[in-house]
Image (tube, rainbow, N blue to C red):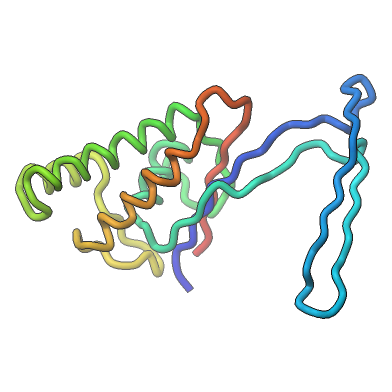
Length: 165
């Protein structure tokens, strides 16, 4: 058990509306771990949207708390919540600022700790993991920067955050 966190993106297709004129085919082969593979065929007129995984965190409570405060209006009920690309860019910038300050001043410096507690403090919760400012805290920030660097700000796509604990 613990805090699991997911960022997904959804692309609206609207294949279920004839005026959208969606063509093509979707065929997916699933290796079931046995001798047999499962072939899934989906007609375009059955696709309203496509959901894709963007990233995953485990017990990154400071990142979760940021999403709760900035994308979920303070409501933490494991609900799926829309997140704007601007919000994701803001989170990435905060992580980069803290990591840059750590590299300049050192992990335990007052400058870094003040920035952390002002912008991205650890948060306690039901199996949320450690609230210590340690290597794991900074690894979560590094992971977040890498994950959010993959986002194309010009892409016409919607992002969603959801947690489970």
